[in-house]
Amino acid sequence: MSDATFQPPAGAFTRSVPIRFSHSDPAGIVYFPHYFNMFNGLIEDWYGEELGVDYSKLILSGGSGFPIVHAECDFRVPSRMGERLELTLIVDRVGRSSLGFVIVGHLGGVERLRARIITAMIALDTGASKPLPEDLRASVEAYRLRSAGR
Amino acid sequence: MSDATFQPPAGAFTRSVPIRFSHSDPAGIVYFPHYFNMFNGLIEDWYGEELGVDYSKLILSGGSGFPIVHAECDFRVPSRMGERLELTLIVDRVGRSSLGFVIVGHLGGVERLRARIITAMIALDTGASKPLPEDLRASVEAYRLRSAGR
Amino acid sequence: MSDATFQPPAGAFTRSVPIRFSHSDPAGIVYFPHYFNMFNGLIEDWYGEELGVDYSKLILSGGSGFPIVHAECDFRVPSRMGERLELTLIVDRVGRSSLGFVIVGHLGGVERLRARIITAMIALDTGASKPLPEDLRASVEAYRLRSAGR
Amino acid sequence: MSDATFQPPAGAFTRSVPIRFSHSDPAGIVYFPHYFNMFNGLIEDWYGEELGVDYSKLILSGGSGFPIVHAECDFRVPSRMGERLELTLIVDRVGRSSLGFVIVGHLGGVERLRARIITAMIALDTGASKPLPEDLRASVEAYRLRSAGR
Image (cartoon, rainbow over all chains, first blue to last red; front, side, top):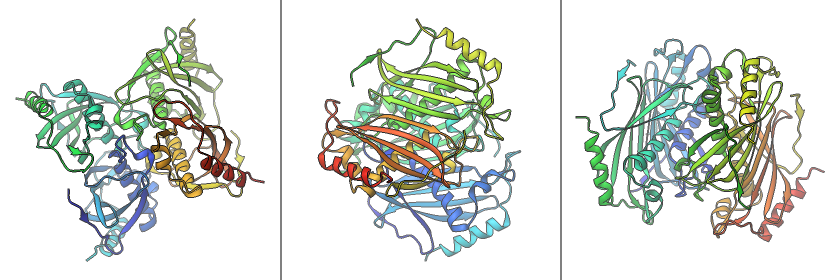
């Protein structure tokens, strides 16, 4: 796997995650399920810090749920304890009831991993999908535009 | 999401995983990164119990590594504490240095999730991919054939 | 740390846990928080398999909670991937609203770790402790007696 | 359990940890093994940020290991998603080869949990304890004094 460069788009939400002992496998690199946990944390922070939405209320109240229906990641370059991995969140797609995120992990301008996460809004009682609230959709769409890069 | 039925192919490796309190999120369903952890455990058990390969030696010795280069999953039906999720491992592709797995999670004949995991064999010193050992390749290929489901 | 021998009392509930890649730290031994996760799983299995109590109902319904109020462990001998650690559950104390467990991890008659876990029954609305249901208390007390060893 | 107040000693190392969806159990509070993971992260940060010691080198190189030989915690007040728990590290005891830490979790001046963690320095080849390096001991002892809270 050759190194791919990555520069976060201006306006994109980026947070760094310290790579810890607890993430490290016997080969000294991050055990891959931990990355999915980091992605969920990034989305959580993005809701709160970028959109000003209370994620815990969003996912836990009002009879709605926000399950992840698809998650995938290409792991290109491993990360090691002591590093700080930069994670950038890009909104890929705003659907009727679903949101598609691309999350890029990078360090020093080199792309280390690239994930795609899709969440769907559902009614908790029936499990059926339901449309995103209009204010949430508008807020996400505005973020998508201001972080679209060029 | 409509229910999809799933019947494991004869000869396919299936193990059940108890869904625990520790897997459960505030909505009472499995928090998705735990599934990836379960998949890794399934592959580990498959190496040992189905192929008779010592996974810890395979991945930790001889200067070779076996990182996961791609992982993805479609989550169709949530699982809850107290259930036992059946996980079936299917070998999708045997490459020069990579192995592709499909893992299906099911219960009562209903498919709940479907994952795709790709591992690659690398030299630990250079990080470059290296061909799978011939005996391992033969062993995996034999499993692929006997579990092909026809 | 010198080796201490351990023989589970007759009638004590013992389950083996496979030590996995996912448990292993960069030194190749189990990262200690995983043990606490294993202890919780053991208690869960003990309720279901030994007492015939539905743990998910016990802890999630009826307005009661069963939080862990104290947890401790002495780690004597590390465990490594590929081993199966035996965990034995001993009921140490049956209080008005609390239960005290001792969990011993052992392999080949050698004690590897010894934990003490205390759970308390509380009312979820007030957080105040409440007495254990009589049938549960009787069931736990019966287990304590039949596993008291001698 | 009545509320206990806690004020970190001047000079004590304190970091806040966001309580996340991933930490939360079906009752909406932190699943207790996650706390032990947080404690390990706090110790890691303390080594790096307070003592200026490279923790990964300390625990992974030079033929020495730094296993945790004892961990315990009293959980008084649960924590919930969206909160930021403050964790304060106090050095309790500097032994020949062991270090004793007290970690207090608090929020708004109320003590929520109190942990005790003991690590020991060992030779990786024999597993025998070995004395702490003098410069490390001096550094830890200096911290102990400047954070002694009087």
